[in-house]
Length: 124
Image 1 (spheres, rainbow, N blue to C red):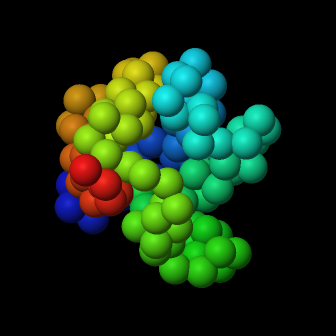
Image 2: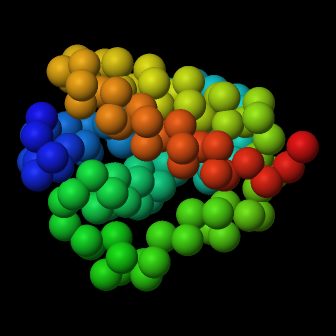
């Protein structure tokens, strides 16, 4: 992985979309996370796919359709404490592990997710 390559360049749209799908499979199994979502997880999965594609260097469809991500503001209506962050991170790590990515790519992605998850804490 060199500095001019993005995660999107290295793994492609298919893997990023698969990550979102696998993540929401984990959400569906986790009572703490599941209660934050409507019954139908498909719209949330699509939004996460678009967001991750953009974050990792792909098309900017998320911003074109939804405006600036403003993650903290968009998540402000839910109480997110360290425990909820951990549930979210665990679901994302399980999903990420299922992709079987090259270790350096996996580490870069984990670094992003840890930073983003910590930033979402708004309670306790």
